[in-house]
Image 1 (cartoon, one colour):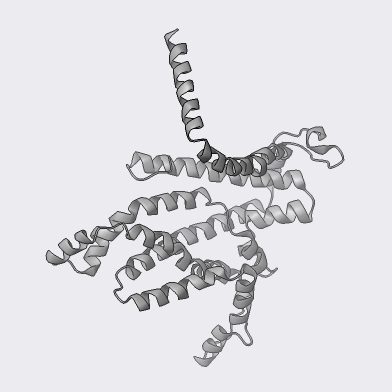
Image 2: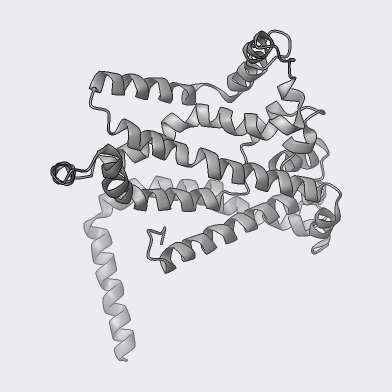
Length: 311
């Protein structure tokens, strides 16, 4: 009886709070509705990964095949190449691209000249607003073996032109560093915002104690934004198996396929181009499950080490 009474009181209290703040819940309602309609309801379609989907029979009417499509993917000759490329590119981005915005924010925060600071911010933000299609077009122009700026410089120094966009060895480096150029400035914004919360008194005290700029960055600024870094790192780990499809697909060609074929492009080709819907759904589901496990695992690791975590 006591438990029922407690639950009833708690429920009554919650309803009172909802009625009191009903305007806020009404504002939140469209967002909840959006996620329900466009993100949660379509999830029932995941079951086609366990079926031999036929459009004439629909999702529920198609025959059940269990883990057949997963087994087919694991035994496919493409499995090793696709997984390796996906992991290698994401690890490359995590080790090289992730720290760059942090370093830029820490350095820019020390700049005293506001005019120069605004100029750097504008120059570094601008590439983010360029279309991916335009970015890839620029890469083909700059790296062209005949008229490209980079190859012109190589020839000027006595080297032989390199067909970068057709080289499997160069593909990952071009993909990652062009991404840094496009997104580093934009990613820097959140770290600059976090640095604004650092008390100037800490820097003044450090200057009195004889600390130089590098010491202040290392012992004041960096620890202050560490929670933000950890949250963004967890989110990056949570999408570790996801590579930008559009840019990857646009940069692909038969000569660099051994380095450029990743899970996202493989799912597109098998699912939409080859109409193997169940098989591509199985590959996509495998990718999502790995991302989910990485997110949960890394978040728990952050909690166990007393770092900032998502929950």
